Length: 415
Ligand SMILES: Nc1ncnc2c1ncn2[C@@H]1O[C@H](COP(=O)(O)OP(=O)(O)O)[C@@H](O)[C@H]1O
Ligand SMILES: [Mg+2]
Image (cartoon, rainbow, N blue to C red; front, side):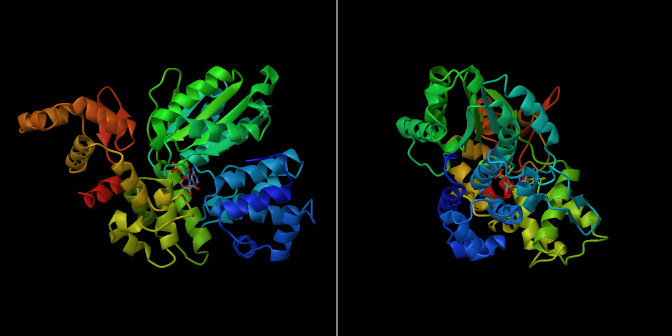
């Protein structure tokens, strides 16, 4: 991913990566085909801010965060006013219940604390991993943090997405990361004043080789910082793990209403506050699920959604994602595919617990002997399911475990 190129080259590359023709980008963004063409050929070097912000918003709306990121990066570096480049997604939209979605970070709902905590800790810890279930907002948060910290990484911020890589080959991963770094200059160049950050997105399916690559990168490039996203917690020395949790009920409603407003501007949800609360609770405050449900409002009423099984709501693609992340059903199926036989059995068994449970609840059951026989490695298995974000954990004096509703429902059909 090169930042050093022209805006036109950058745009053309991101558009082609998305598989869009110039016409399609024009359609999605609302700018004319001629404008797209003129930017790409370099006939227009400094496009109007409003055109550029629409183009950036089109990539953002399609979940092409890398494109969104590099285009904004370019505009910032080249003095194209940032607030304007951002305005496509943070335009003041007011949802029908009067919730305003206009302030600076509204496009990233409910993550202010996570961002400020990470902005403090990341410069200290050279290797940070954002961990959480698919669709919780890891990628989005990683890019937001990288964006905020850009001024502290004078050597540049590079992004590499391993989600599309299937070779679990250490060399292939190393090469992919180095290519991303090289686009910013030689990785070895970095000096103290030229710290650089690499964001490595989606490593869960390449965990072992990716961890080795990260260790090697940290050893070979003393001025390199790493931020990775994964569904699977990384067990390696020196990694700072940050859990990305679903949104709080209030933030979930804000996101839902914001997206509903965007998908269906005429829909009036005034007076439907409790239905909105209920749907957000049903979807566990998971941003991806909320986005899909909001899109569904174009065709199905909120009452229909309330009655529908979660897995039917989330079977629809939200945005153009990777094949295994196109829908939440595919995303869970993909994670499930990476589990061993015993882990799957435990997951199915635990899916019968509708409420949060403790280890004591598992061990204190009348059928505890059968449980001990069935799951002789219960602790290992529970730990593993937590590490893989298949179980959520609430850490009080006693730990309470729970399964997100859509995971429970999807694995119900994967028996
Ligand atoms: N805090 C948030 N505010 C607004 N939208 C969000 C937020 N977090 C995630 N999203 C949206 O939810 C979807 C899933 O987020 P993503 O970062 O891709 O999740 P993950 O990387 O954990 O699978 C994306 O379309 C993203 O735009
Ligand atoms: Mg992601």
